Amino acid sequence: DAKTTQPPSMDCAEGRAANLPCNHSTISGNEYVYWYRQIHSQGPQYIIHGLKNNETNEMASLIITEDRKSSTLILPHATLRDTAVYYCIVLIKAAGNKLTFGGGTRVLVKP
Amino acid sequence: DAGVTQSPTHLIKTRGQQVTLRCSPISGHKSVSWYQQVLGQGPQFIFQYYEKEERGRGNFPDRFSARQFPNYSSELNVNALLLGDSALYLCASSLEGGHSPLHFGNGTRLTVT
Image (cartoon, chains in turn green, cyan):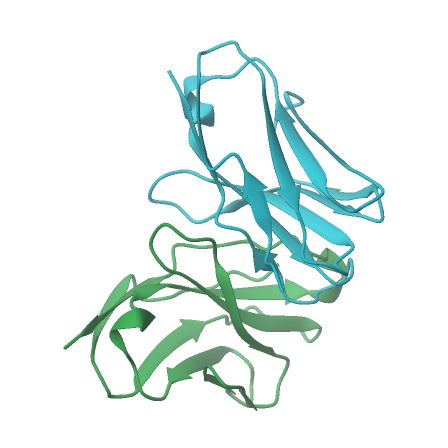
């Protein structure tokens, strides 16, 4: 699986959009970009995934650059409950459920 | 609907002992995966089972084993416990064995003394 690079931490103001970057410059054509988050003392939570088109669901939006070498997870209106570690993972379909978690980005939403 | 449930939530064992952790997947999910999360690190893949067959194994010693039952629940066994096995053990289920999103339980916190 391709390696991902994320900033170790970032702060965000409550009510503002949080833009979380992820670099995956070695991604191959059949690898998907997945985002999970882990709130303290809980298991990771699936957020969103995509291949090459931008995706949106009730939790977030995923913007993937045209060359697919980077992506951005957008939380449109951050709340205090969005404070968590956010993981960007690239995954080949044949890898099944073998997610490779990196260090993630620790996001602190401040009032 | 109930999410992924794991038992027990906390466990304390002594070095050399054996432990069994249990996981019940979301109803209708046929794939179960196990992950180990050491404090301060991201989860690491241990096993995946789909339709009662092992589909993948991570870089863990043979002291770690698992199985999946006909009702799709699963057990993770760890023999000859070491201090380094102290971690949060996470179970995740998904609809199929492919890349459908994983739904994680809140884990079993294992402390080895």
